Image (cartoon, rainbow, N blue to C red; front, top):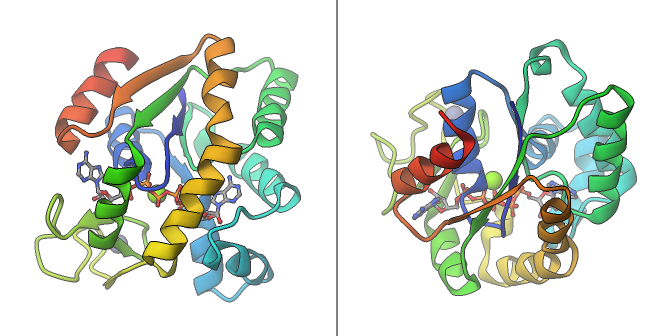
Length: 214
Ligand code: AP5
Ligand code: MG
Ligand code: ZN
């Protein structure tokens, strides 16, 4: 199964992608997580990405597309994957469609997790993320077992650099300009499904599974 997660920053793409990946036994591929791992590791890619990310801007397509296509051609992606945070622009979506077509493949579903902007700003302030494994928590809605410690890997949880209110606002603007048009793109491809992302997070998961067919 090959799934794309669509939705605004903070809509819950990462939260749901992790659960889907676990349920279907497929990798969770998050471009944001790959960039953050590179920033932490001090790589050239990380240096390139950081300035854009800190400003709430998109990392340029020429960097992002190659990196993602590389990742999904690895052996663990053979039976499918969940894409979280990619594609984010029309050129990214077209590159993905073309690369898959060339192998006689296609995406199965694009899941739009729909949450209005007002709810997003509240969520971001309470988010805590694990820099090591990318797991995401919320101080009120999805707390870790021990405060500040990742349930999955035991590393420290942090407030992401780009979760300051001004940067969140900028990311929302970029989302509406550049990423929201993908909803129509995948509707035209006939693979769009939309879920109400304002519900409790386990309910959102149940709604997603219902449309994917368990
Ligand atoms: P990325 O890491 O993808 O960030 P994002 O899209 O802004 O999305 P977030 O991770 O902020 O939100 P999410 O939807 O995953 O929400 P989450 O599950 O954490 O990208 C970061 C940056 O990298 C970009 O700005 C860009 O610069 C660059 N980048 C990445 N990909 C790129 C690309 N393809 N092209 C160019 N640049 C790229 O949930 C949010 C919070 O809410 C959590 O605390 C969670 O616990 C809580 N929550 C989740 N669901 C619920 C619920 N139902 N009810 C209550 N709380 C909930
Ligand atoms: Mg995320
Ligand atoms: Zn972790």
